[in-house]
Amino acid sequence: MIKACLTFWMAIVSLITLGQTTFSKLYWNDYTISGLGIATDGEFVYSTGLGLYNDDELYLPNVFFLKFDVLGNQIDKTYLIAGENAYYRSGYAGGFELLNDSILFASGHFSEYDTMFPPWNRKHLGQLYAFNTEGDTLFTRKYKGSGFIEFNRLHLFNDKVICGGFTQDTNGVASNAYLTKVNYEGIQIWELMLGDTIHSEATGLLDTISNSTIIGGGAVVNSISPDGIMRNGKIYKLDASGNVYFSKEIGTPYDDSEIEVKVSKNGQSYLVRQYMDTVINEGDYEYVQYIGKTDTNVNFIWRTFLNDKYYKYIYTLRTFEDGSIVAVGTTIVDETYEPHGYIVKLDSNGAVLWERDYTNNPEGNHYLYDFQKMPDGGYICSGLGADTIDGVIQSMCWLLRLDSMGCLIPGCDEVSIPEIAVNSETYLSIYPNPFGDAATVEVHVPQDFTINGTQALRLDIYDMQGRLIDGYSNIYPSNPGETIRFKMYRNTMTAGNYLATLKYGDEVLNTIQFVLK
Image (tube, rainbow, N blue to C red; front, top):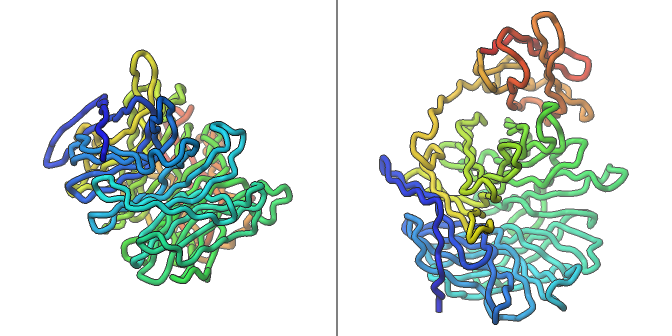
């Protein structure tokens, strides 16, 4: 039976403006829970994630299920595998999808403890959960791999479920990307281990192309690294039988993250996200998040770097029929260094249309892990929020429903759509020009450009007396024909005229003038 629980709502905003509902609500069950996945059938909203189960006054980690109406009112709550074993830990449900408005699938991992808090647990098994929209468990299945598995994502594909993550041997030495295909009863059809056993993961978003191709992203240690610590993203394409027919590493000469990939709605391109170990401006956070679009051979059409003084990280991105892209994650916004929930929208050409950050309590951590688009055009996000209970900051499941402009309070920002110079004949453009606090720099790499993999682009900023006053560097072009965008900030510059010079090695590619207001 589904258990009732105390629901604690804080920072509630419930508005219906122009047919769009917005709210921010927190849900509390006497201990921390976080909403790692979200699904909706348009009438109800479902969330799952990591919570705690009270077993004879002992709180044990577990995977929970919550059901809400579209206004965020909690209807049901249950634990998916409560009471199975007194000494287990069930991992997060990183993948979460709704099948035919009746069955929900979630992926994660399952851990058995020899003792409650061992120094290192080598008994992780990949786990697939299936439950109905009332929260009743239909089945759970465990998968062993090389002895240690964590699932991070799943995707429903051609009447089957694909789960992705990584597997290691029980000594924690050899590591491979891991994919498995199962039917709707969780019976395994095939499993696949990818990579060089040094360090490989299929942790990225999984997606499919028509009914025949699986595409997934992950990470791999760069084999040319002398010390074995340089990591690149890696994209895999497989047929429906699990045969790999294409793979490509994506990264810089530094230590980069895994890469995540989604297929555009027309199937003619892919959308990716990754962060790179590089500093675009001296004052920027060194791991720069970007969103990019590639052709079907994984050559970049454009990349938009979300460079900032502070940290940004994206957990989930989705693309829509108009080609737009929305992504959610977390960001630091000031020197308190408390994470805020983060959402950003780009158009089909990579221009940032708007980006927002939200927090319920400036002293608590906030993350947005997943989201769905609602029938009214707005977005509902699940994550981890925080607020104060009895004088103590507590973490809670967080639902954030925003309008189609990403606003919690409609009209939160007046957004002008920039004019984009896609595939320009010039190397460099800056817009708006003149600008106040920040502008977008757009670099177009010509089709006949020769790329040296060890060289980066650099943008030098000079005053009208020819003095170098700022610079943007470590921007590695990936392939000829791509467009690269990043932010240029006012920093210490005062109002006036300036020159921006784009260089590649010692070669000057372009110089343009811009104006600071």
